[in-house]
Length: 292
Image (cartoon, rainbow, N blue to C red; front, side, top):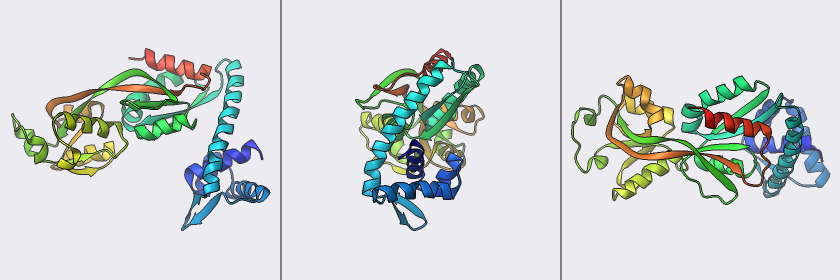
């Protein structure tokens, strides 16, 4: 068993697709398939089942994936120590960030970091808050950026910034023309919100609870930040969303804010408590926390 075989196995497991994993690893499909076949043949196990046009991990494959990731994490740590000795001239960081942070808060800060350290490759994976925490805990990502709190004993969380949860509607929505809303206004409009597991949705549910409401009391559809903004701009539904996502639309008057701010929210940096802090990570954290 080689590290290369483990890397290929983990990539195929993540993508659940041999061709996509091969493309990500810059390998041929045949080389990728051969590496999986070599592992299965040597140890007499089945790591994947073919289901339709895709593949899924077997029970054996899922158990092996945890161990494979642990080995790859240790190997990556050893490699990073050597890269540290090169004085940050080369290296790689894998970041996981929730949608709002990744799309609206992080880009300018990453540009400043990469201008200062052009030899450090930065790979950003975008997911919701729950998935980001899992990726950091399982060492799929070196650092995570999330909106709101996370309860995970394996991770450290450092507050770095924040945003506000606001309600917006499109110009054709009746609320956009009302100077004063009724006390029961939340029940009087359809809503379009983020999916389960997103920090934005969790924060909105907490806000509803404080007002004596539940999500089931509202008419709700689910979508991503960009899909939500487009739907609200052109339709008759409302949404609760980060002010970072809609500030430009509000300024352009394609969206209207109502009822002030629902709540304030903090952003956090996540790290695994037991992982070595590389020089590249330390430099990134210093750069990001110094940015305004």
